[in-house]
Image (cartoon, rainbow, N blue to C red; front, side):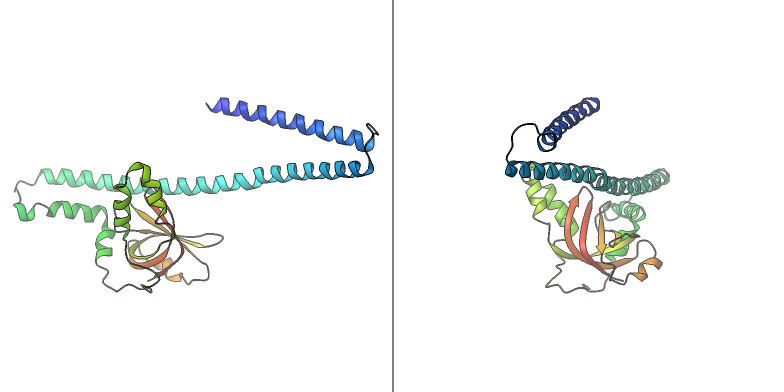
Length: 255
């Protein structure tokens, strides 16, 4: 499939080059070599057309080399970085789960109904320690609730999208874009980009993360000394929901 696409691209490329060369040579021969009998007005329009053709080709060339390539690389870097983080988390949780299962095999007492969920809850908290930290954050909402709503939560958004029929799923997802929210989250990572600070936080839903794009005018110095899983309030406008990630722009935090 890839070889067919490459072959088609080269065919289109040479067809374009051939037509472009013929157009340029024809224009040059009429304007400068005296072929044909164009009027002065027609000659002027031919020169303008030649200039526009060359300019358009140069712009297209530079855009394809420096524009599209840069965006693709940026997107690929972002995707690969997120995949690496996910794999590390899954590997750590898998190892922890295996150890917990091995340990549980040696436990002879059978718990009664009231205690049946205790081992499972303990395992979840050990696999995702930030859940307990988020739940334990008792400070009230940190931002103006008339602007940044605490509802719906990320869990409610996920559940709502999941129960939507496939035909309506994309429309339901888009209905959340632009929504301004504030949630309790836990600190995961922090990077300084060219145009913003990019902060990754854990949410109340296991394996689901949020990425905060914070303007560089904001003071985020405390993030540099925070421990992982530290809970705090975040706010922002939902700009994208993709897979297990959600993007918040114009975001802010209160540590």
